[in-house]
Length: 402
Image (cartoon, rainbow, N blue to C red):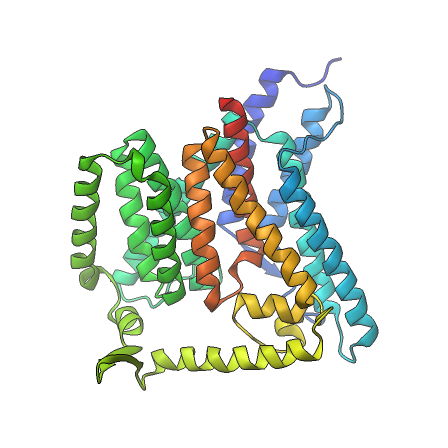
């Protein structure tokens, strides 16, 4: 009796890899342990992680059980952040007079994502990586079409499968950058049209932070790839941009457009916040930043522990102050190094031949960090899983090119 063959392994990967990506993107949530935390649940992402581990075990039945680490630098900083998270949570448990059960649940989720990252470093290769990226773009396109149709029919701020329109915007920007990469380097009209549709879907989410992230992502992507553009590309992008802006009022829910443009006005020679409800969120965030600074000053070294926001100290809604409050100054520095290592990895991969995933990943993550002035998007488990899939795919493709 023999174990699985190389052919069997690849045949299975044709099914498993797209399924894992789909389970992460089309997230279905089943709440559990609501008496402990209202955030506790079992998600389809959990099933994706189980599938990855089953596939890893299956692939090792006919070979050695060594584990290949393709991204040692990112893994190193991720390990440091993980260790600090455990330390701060232990300290929070000892000194907090509130229940930290919710924090423990989210630490378990964190380490589930970490385990996923470690295992896919071993099982992803060039073929599987390209399959994962194309599945991601197709999934984003399907959600975008639904989002645009829903907005056209009057549904306000779509959040399908992501439980938050701002998080959905983060995902759509990622898939838009991937589509842009395929459009530039493969000269594919399909991906060019997909890029336009995905960009339009970002608008339908009504996410102002998402639009800011999109602008930053497009700017970084342009700076990375502009040498590969032709005059035809510039012309096509100009026409697409003008056409998209002209059609927005006809496809986007008027309430969404009002939210996007009613928060600021030009008076007395300068831009000022209006008195509309759309502008109040900016004032509230300013207040939350002040609150976060006060909390940080009370616990500047170890912070309040992972997921103290919002479970123990309330909502803060700005990623950078959240990290400061939860992990303290040391943890914030470690998390910054971890984030920089991710961007560096994509730049290295781009230079080594993974031009699509490398450029798209670096541009998207810069946009994600910019978007995070309005939310803690980089630490959302669903976004973290997608980050690691694109990160490993990029490295695997780069390694296959060498």
